[in-house]
Each structure stands twice: as structure tokens, then as C-alpha cells.
Length: 118
Image (cartoon, rainbow, N blue to C red; front, side, top):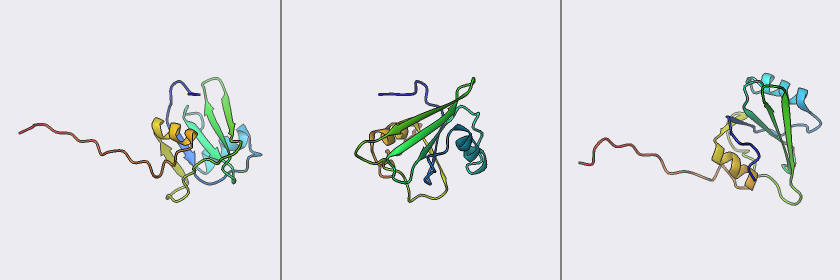
């Protein structure tokens, strides 16, 4: 199921977050720790320590929205062995993450560009 119709930029906060935080706490985390604007319309994705829950914060031009998902038996494949606290995901990686695929092991072919066949 696709939750968001138009996927804007997706920023994943790599470190676990205290899930008692709600909209205000997460918006402050976006500004202070991620150094990004929570009003940008981007999706900001957070995970708890057990990696069985995620929260997604975004601004829809009239107010903040907070989306929450809890897995009943499994855990999200959260990227932990990467540099930096923030990871930018493309739309495909975002869907892979929601489907339980380890995005750090998924690699696309390098795009090629040619000007001539000869």
C-alpha cells in the first residue's frame, strides 16, 4: 500500500529516537539535530530503539502530520553502519524500507550515457 501520493524528499534519522516524542519534539529534532526545516514538505523518518516502530513527520502546508507504523513480529532493516545521522532516501528506497528490505544492500546499476555508438 502506498501511503503518500507524491513522495517528496525523504530524510531518515539513523539513530534511535525516544518514541514519547510527538510532533513538537520531532520537529525540534529535525531543526536542531538534522539541521533541516520541518516546514519543507519533506518526510522525516524516525525509528525506535527496537526498530519495530517508525514515525514519519511532514508538513502539508496547513499543519504537521505524524504517521506511525508498528510491526507486529519483525523489525525494520534500519541502516546503522553508515556515516552521519541523516540519510536521504529516494522513493524506491523508501518503499523498500517499508517492505522490510535492507536498503544498504540494495544497489542499482550505474546509469550509462553515450553520445555515439561508433
